[in-house]
Image 1 (tube, rainbow, N blue to C red):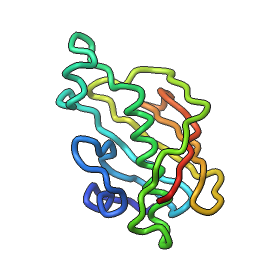
Image 2: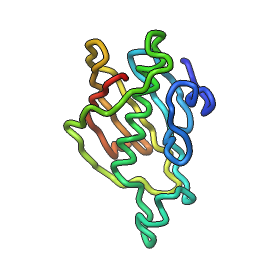
Image 3: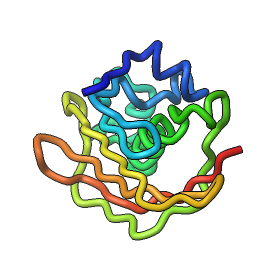
Length: 142
């Protein structure tokens, strides 16, 4: 298994606080897949307004976290180092549960198709083995 710390992740993708939504990568294979984690704390900026009485991580940020993990998978390939992966689309997106403070969000993205600078990743987010979101994410490398 290959792992990455936060500093190593920042060498691959351009995201920074408060928009870097991956704390560490547990395992990855360049161009194939990555598995990472986001340790969700009550101190996240978005909890101030979403929702003050019942803090819930916005679903779109869960999808963004999955995309960042996918970007680590694809941009860790030698030929894409120093590039940026952009969203090209989101298909088959489903939200199946809430993400709340204290959750350890597991983020898994597998690259299922790629042709040149375009590709698709199958992404799944889970908490304690329970799927909370899934989607097919289209990316463009620029």
